[in-house]
Length: 180
Image (cartoon, rainbow, N blue to C red; front, top):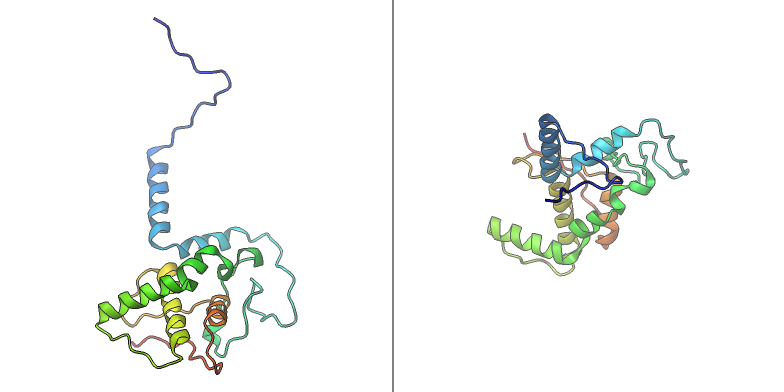
């Protein structure tokens, strides 16, 4: 009988230890449930990289160069990514938070779940889309929050959503802390 031999050019595969496989599985489950954690990990891995050059209109607290000044201290939050990796410019944000069909579906599901009528005043479409986009962002980055729990959305993402679904008068509510 002929014996099978491995080709000389094939590298032997490294076997993962049981603990390493468990760790990989845990990371995969965590990333699936809370994708925003990946951004936290990525932003903590590149401390040696020099900061990108700032523009004069750039808020001092922004590293992605896409943020705009915000009215309150708590809203002065950046995604902490380099300009080329800003969360507000990712394909995922566009798909999950800016796509009108996705937002219409999310809004319909929310209204169905809460037993709300989908009646709106004329001209309120952008406001409805904007608020649905904020909810989609929070769900995408943080998962489902407890009742009354609120999180601040990075300024770059807030302004990307506002630029996509603007208020005709330029009036925006801003962050409202949760009820305790």
